[in-house]
Image 1: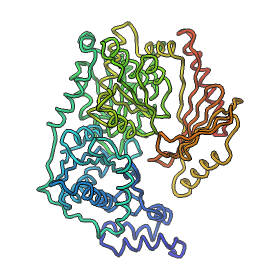
Image 2: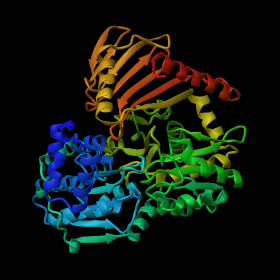
Image 3: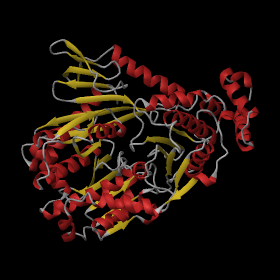
Image 4: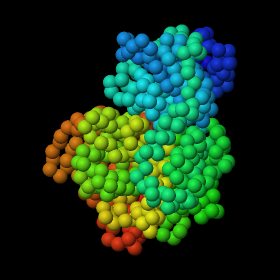
Length: 582
């Protein structure tokens, strides 16, 4: 390969890896890219893998823009430097580390542990893979100063990631997120990283944490007697090769369910996710084997969790007795409806309860809360903001539950992140509750729509990979701001909310006001006269630009559920077409 064809800054970075204090295997891989693959070389070195507000996430391999021992080490050293400043008076700074099923996850976890112990910290390290929400629980339970989990959630097999949690068990929020980023960015050379760990400062943790975590989950049950009557509810569960297999079946058993059927081939821990195209429970294909199993045994409920066990997708039988997938908004609606109604019927509502949702999640949750005099908080996309609201209100208000459209939900406040272990148990409980009342989950959903109106939501995304893709996404967002649309699908835009400029423009009365209650974020929302809501935002973890569509109409009769649902599907199709997205 002619090195003259390589950008000088990229060539300089690659050369520094050949000459620096890197292991021989890494140097051989860099040399190979220099001589054989300019495109991969460019992508691996054109920038530094960004330590964002959620930590690291990227494809694995050599280079400054990849997940590897050195980028993980530099991130951990930056974190350690910050913790030393914040906790300078503490005798021993403590962290807990967990990891998922992905390739290299245990290696990256051990790398982080080594750097932390080399810096004089005490580290609790799980003995093997664990769900991300258990890490959140362990931070609080073990009274740690922070926590780390190695995971790339539902990303493809080539990815891995690194998320940091603060002492409240929630992911990083201001000011710690920005401050840690500053410290990580100050690490310019791997020679500044102390990789020489001290094993005596690592304590391996296991079943004792599991037992306490599962005990807390079981205490959330609101229908124990109903579960006893319907303990043979037929459930099919798949962990899609991930961490859910460790605790979801145990939790369901503790709740009292006795007929939990596993998808055996997907119980195998496998970072290559060999039985699916994508380990994402949002994708229908990821649940195909579970649904096949459910048909064989005539199951009542199908559930699937993502690789790190914090999100869950489900399938239920419709009115034609066919399994259909529910989206994240529908699952969240079932959970919030059940929780609020059970709290109300049990006499637990005192007037200081609340739920939390994100701005891209269905407004149906707010409708349910409003009708029952339960406060609803709206936050930016990201469960860390839900955790932040819980922290702010824990001394004077009671958290019932919360969720986001991307299949993440939480009940109780002993975990401060979305939790699929809790969610699976509660969804199974709702299914039993519905059956006890002569209904299916699908019937229950129809009842909710009949009472509150039929909401229809859809997520669409466009993938734009690499440096050019990132630049194109920014151009798209800039164009929406500089050249705002006046109407979509023959309906006038009546309001635009821009969370980056923190402005709300009302085109009906010509007014403009500030949006200062939420932090700045690269998100734009369009509100149409026909009640359509469209949200556009670049993904914070993947090379995508995401579009969230929400439409609504009244449901006059349950018999017209399917007909009305199809009408709203068509409306979303027309909105997408009108925006030139297909």
